[in-house]
Length: 296
Image: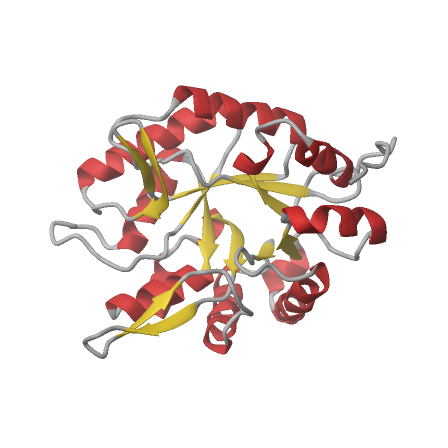
């Protein structure tokens, strides 16, 4: 594949309160060829740490579109501390891309120096809260910017957890000054799996901290005991119940940048744009109804 020459003019890096889509490798060339009417793109930070054509594609694309960086490997909840080398690589990508937003997950993925290639749940305790806050502070100091922390999708809970997840996430934001990436699909998946009330979760989050919303598809599996488990696999269109929860989130938080994620069986850009159009319609409806949005 060929990478076109760099454009002389770069657009603003600010992420608008509109619907964007997750940019994956298969989209690089089609985006450059067709210049689709997409408000912004989000990419996984780790996919652009190496050499080859991927960083070159992103260098070109970001001159026509705002870009957000979404990390999946820093392991903010690791008791062993952050990997300094990985954090330095994140900083290098941030300096190169100059993204409008930078985000990471409320999870851990490293033990004994081994990367487990998954976003694992934390025991929601005061000790874990201190660890996460220390690492968020470290990341923000290194990057010299505010980051967003995303709520997880979970399939089990620790018996010794003492803090509800929504309170834990709120405390991280209040103690560190970071923002929250509110993944509405994750809230719905976890609420169904654990018997939580998704509306209580949303109502507990501080509106001023919400810097981005994620939407994605999920699958449903029946376990041997007959119980239904929802899996956050990012492999399908957004479910109707998640769309309803998204509209409630907009009523509470106002219009904020919203991303359509799709990571398995990744479809063409056009399919993602159809989902983004639905999110944009909900955003526009909220703009018309919200005095806060009209005054912004």
